[in-house]
Length: 93
Image: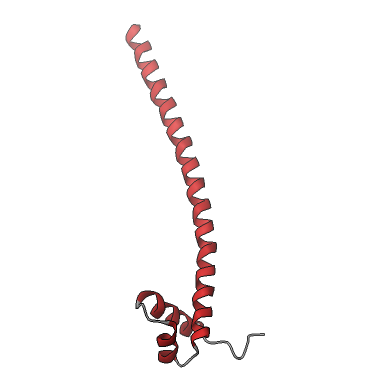
């Protein structure tokens, strides 16, 4: 059951945006949105905690892609050597 005292996500997102992008203090954001400064601070903490999860998954994806790139580069290098080998073989005939 949703918390009847929870603020709408749009309001929370706007509070986080004002703090991050506009550089407003927690108190100024709170005054503008009609909430308390600790409430805005909690929204920002919650947003930052969510970003850490995203950062961790992004780092894992980067590692996976780097590994895949190294493998593709190795395969490319092997194919280049094979092409050069067979080109020499056909010249020798």
